[in-house]
Length: 229
Length: 256
Image (cartoon, rainbow over all chains, first blue to last red):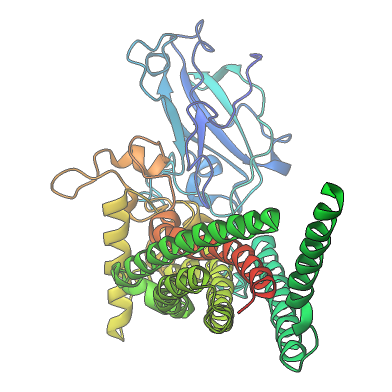
């Protein structure tokens, strides 16, 4: 039992980490170092069947064939490889992932029971890696957390109704209406003022100025001669 | 008396300055709206299905309002210099009418911005892209238009490649999910039009697959112009409001 848990790829982030029928796992690097002679298999199981999976199950038999998944086969074995393909170092910096469900050509081909075919439903599924020497299980990892795939909604669920009015639009409309109302009120006030003006209301406004000036001058001139005398 | 004379002179120069600014802004508004109306927006037939033509009406109104503002600002300057009550009254009334029209244009432009959402494009793309039986030609056009958009702008879907994962589509009914999580046009393509790295594209690696959505490329320019028409018009109207208030006050103070 190795203390490694298979995980969905987080680094580098890939857009298709889960799709409707595939998912992407990190490769189990530096995990099976002591088992250079073993075949490393990926076991994909329905979540409820994970606890009842027997490690002595042989790959390539109808009991573990992909074509029988999910019924009557509850867990299948695929992606057979050796330690050579999971080296510890990654000098090229290449993307090293496992895409579960990428082989569509053999999905219905019963002569290929180890097919890495597309998953038939959204899951949830659990996976683990199993190392077999001959047909003897020598090492296994932990089961992964349950993996859910994506389910698609129908396009008719997209609502194309308008999204309502944004704050900006309401602000514009309100402020402009208020400004326009103020201007209209000002115009009305102006016209009222003008019409009352032309009817003779305050047209005497300009007159008192000239009268007071004359009086002031007369007063001033009248005083001077009196002072001299 | 001297003091009130000074005040009147200051008010006069302020009003003239205000009118000059209005005149210049009027020209700028006309230019902006002409640019908006003449810019190519019929590029993609997929816009036609979802196009809202209100924004064009707002732009046309903006052109005439801009010219009217320019002409009225000249009238205003003449009226202020000549200290003529009738000229200024005509100016105020015509300015109010222009103000009303520009208000309508601003509100229309602002509302248009709200109505432009990704949903109609998303629905159209999912329902029509690569529809297997092109009974009518428009579906074929939609497919061609989307391919053109996706290749030219290096984008995929409306919001991203996950559009094809989150919703069923006409495309999905003819292409299985494992081989075609999203269309091949979403892949980074070489000079011959073949995907550079098909496995990388199917995984969704950023280098081999376009992971940004096309919504910005489709609606971005139109949206920005609508924003410009709405808010520039709003700014002009606020300034015009101040100038008109000053003019009304000036009108009530002068003697004819």
